[in-house]
View 1 (cartoon, rainbow, N blue to C red):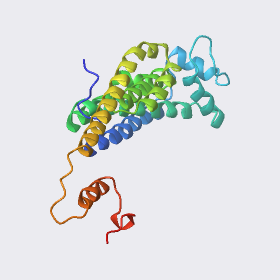
View 2: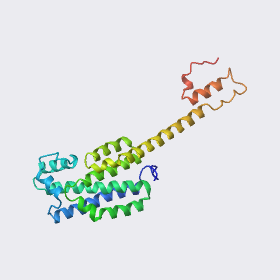
View 3: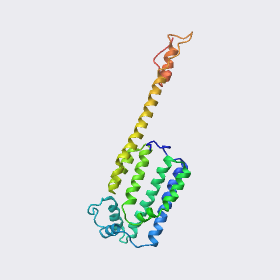
View 4: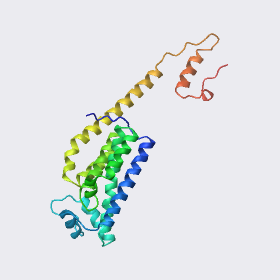
Length: 237
């Protein structure tokens, strides 16, 4: 396993597949939530029955926050279910984004289709379960860390840790990936900086015959440092 992705950012086709994955997965889940309104799962029923409470016993608060917000807007639980359908779409899009860092766009698109219609992922993302929120945030956290945006990745990782306890298990590999990508960035920056300094220290051509006081040598250095000869205080008589 390597923390270094094949690509630092998805190409245009990869970004297209990320958008398609989100729209397709969200649409599939929304249709099922509307066609089959029965609430399944003890946790889901408990969350909806206590929609005025953010912290339910030992459960982490972030998923319940979306239940509270949805019920505050509309008493019908269908809105809460649609919110979690959107989280299911974000989970699939995040997984597709991760794939796009390691494989070409066609393979990422194939993964997007599989994940959009995966029965287990659909089951967990059409009622208020923790999984779509936690794993969606995890996918995007690793994507941003792997593409060199560690600060945003860390914020998403912290949010995932407020969604499901299993997310805490991913903290060591997340910091490994984020640190590795930061080290690569620093190394690349240092290499470019040293190369630029080396170019500035190249030998300056000696003045040619007919110049006064080596002015051509001086003006060559001014040109390398961005000095405008028209504003030079040196006056030749």
